[in-house]
Image (cartoon, rainbow, N blue to C red; front, side, top):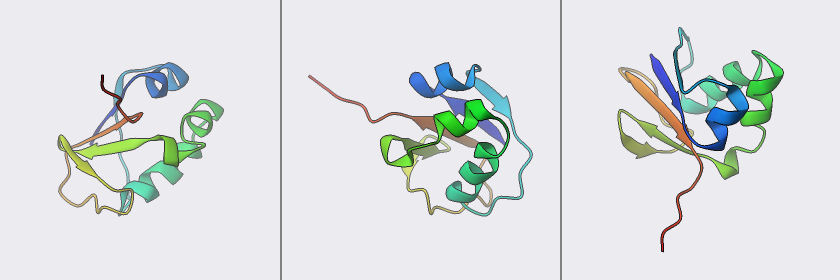
Length: 81
């Protein structure tokens, strides 16, 4: 699946997107896999309460299943004005 990173998540990881082969069943499982990769991922996903996730461009929760998902995007909460 394609994993996209935005804002400070992208800055901490160092890439805007990457193709990830995973056996994760949920977003939380994927985050756990990513955290275990390298320190930069551990730093980016240290506090998931500061993150939002979208699956195939629709907002989702971290317990959402990944079956059939082609794109996962991680980004900080957006503020408006």
